[in-house]
Amino acid sequence: MAEKLVMMLLTIDPENPHLCGTPFFQAASAAAMDVEVEIYFASRATRLLVNGVADKIFPSDNKVKSVYGFMQDAAELGAKFFACGGALDAYSITKDILIPECTGVAGGASYMCRVLDDEWKSISY
Image (cartoon, rainbow, N blue to C red):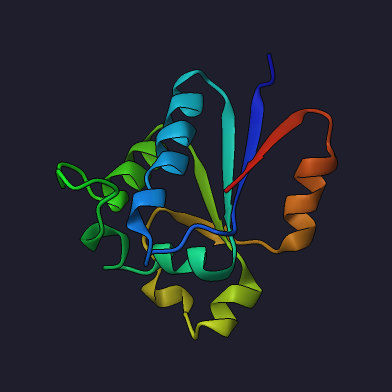
């Protein structure tokens, strides 16, 4: 079994919250199985890393747990979150307004290194 998982969030968008919970639930599940997990946020998904965005949206109508709650679960289990520098610039997002769970900024080359490494499996959303 693979011990490393990289995830790309490209089509996930806070304006479609029903799609936003699954990646973090799956990341938490993998991390709970002692899999090293890295999540790369690109395009509009990067906005989930802004303080106050993910905690106001819910992936289901029952509103039991916010998207941010699912993100926190994954981070607490060791998943690392990386923001795309280009997307930060495109959406005028500065590092000082990112959630504390954001590990850092990493671009396409970092993600591609993971995808091309045989030790890593990848999932894209």
